[in-house]
Length: 186
Image (cartoon, rainbow, N blue to C red; front, top):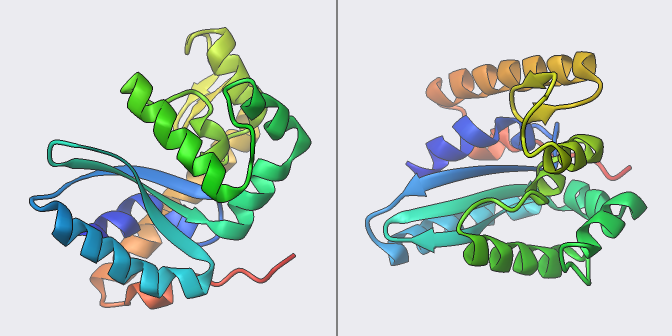
């Protein structure tokens, strides 16, 4: 079940199109979920990906699939570092940033706005979302778009097509190990 959710909600990340994907999953037993995450990471980590739990409540877990190199680059950008510093991210290493994100999710009980940086959203759109409280966007899809709507439409279409192709391949029997694309270092 987790593997299917990973493909359904994380295809653009599996394909190397974005640094991260976020999805929620229901589970019956925490130990079984932890074992499933560990087994998936055994497949994903050698391909430069990882899955982490950001929040658990009741029988729901918020999971984050990410590409280590792409996330590291996103967090290292000077504008992203300055933005994240305003939200208490003192260290923008992956481990520290994910730890702070977990704290923020637990404290707020909702998604903190800076989560867009972790998902590959344009920083200008993340900042505009905060400024306009989610209103007055040009377009709404994978995120609320406030600038460069044409590029966002192109990306939304690319992400949808990628998800369709990945789900079809998964149903046809392609294993996760073949769907998790290795992206060469830049």
